[in-house]
Image (cartoon, rainbow, N blue to C red):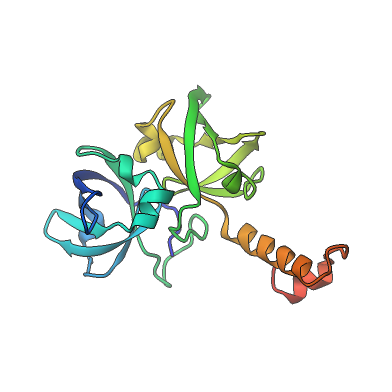
Length: 217
């Protein structure tokens, strides 16, 4: 589990996603400080497992399903990636609950300044867009962000200067791809509602009492 608060940008040293055991080798600094074999690290929002490390880099396994669902297969040597270590129970939850399980890949349509903010418009696949609401949370390349607006085929973000400067969104532009993870709470609500329908209660409205009893509110 992660928070979507990026700790640093790492640099891709090597990409081997076509071999028998696909992996990424990433140069880093901060996330190496207490790293152990088997640790989980969010790489552009995708939860990967550390298989080896040294003083200035680490290797992480990449499963075929991860390659299908994310934009990690597009990475090349020299690319920068957002890195975050797994959440510790004693840490503050500065962003929102992020699992590191990517729902789909979006495409940046445009970026432009608005005062001290940076506006980013992203095209999103429908399977992710259904979880996105105005002022709700979305993880974009592993960054916990607040949705400014939702449109028919995508959504808009308004980035504060710190986020715009210290994450990969500062380096990406129109036409570039980003990993998207919808809000976890929205997925559970969807599952609960679909479960009610499967039980033959599709005509029954969900009451506030039922949501309270199930722990959704």
